[in-house]
Length: 468
Image (tube, rainbow, N blue to C red; front, side, top):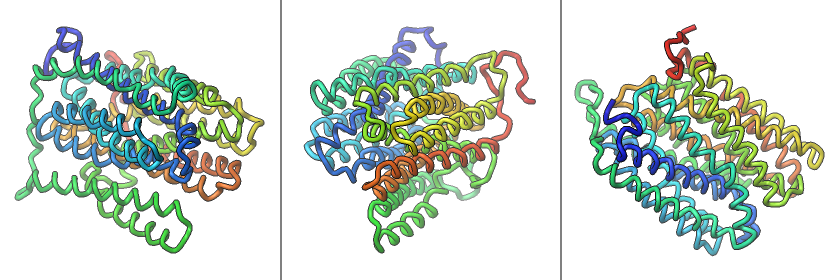
């Protein structure tokens, strides 16, 4: 393993703690924005831009993940981590000062650039610094760092929004970023994490050309996602042209960003990427509109809606803890299947409750807890599957492919949900019902993909065969 054991030196310990703090900051902002957006929309207006506040983040993240993956393989992960840190902080300031919904969307776009770069760099650092058994433990801690803020973040965001203003939801993240940065920078400067040796390419192949193609493809994928979102916002002839253009651009550019040899129905890495695209995207699309559903259809207040998000986060945290237990004698791919199945069940429960507004609130809450449990199981496990199936020199590329698929899935799923919401804006009970049905259907497609991954060893087990 490169470096020393975790906790073996203060510098290593400080680096890990600093990374976790920055992840906590990003996670708090993510869940807090979901909670605070109904208040921001009520203040700023332009409800038709509601979904854009989320998809702008993901669209920017799509490009940033690819750029950071290329930079991590070529220069090492340290520089992308620092750049992402600074850009994300600038996005927080811009969103916090936003006087209009348009500026808020722009701030979220900048946050996506920074957050995508940071997330990718953190994953590559874990892959480079830790051996397979330690990675499972680190992924558990990383999942906890992601989900711990979700246990208190919604209530804190609701309190900030009602006591002061939703603007402070963004400003409140800056102190955490400052502390995390102070802990990260000194040990990071002393850690040797240079570029990896490239995988031998075919005759005449040029790594620089491939890297340039991937960056161009990432920009095109982001543009294609924007086109799809625009197509869904307007129901007219021009929308059809936007739709065709968006699908065409995605069909041309997306294969460049996926693992070599990717096939839509392929096993291994291809199936793992599909799970992130479909299942994670569906959960994010549902989460985007869940607080609005609870407030407008179930008559919850902002704090109550935040508490429901916390219930789902508790399920996610438990799932993340569960996936690393030695007594869970399942292969990694089997854990992914179980997680996606749990998420599908949870979203079906929510969809049923959404069709009967005000009558089955308890089912909606229970469904969100079950869906969160499934997410905790399969999110950490899909990352570990990619690490297990990747050569070290391709880890940045394949990790970026996984995260690109997640960002694209999140953008498209939230865009689908936003399109359904806009189509039924005059009848929100129909809007909420149909959009949750759509998210449940996407998760079902993700479940089919999870069954195609194939056997993957579970390194959380000590001397226990998981091949059968």
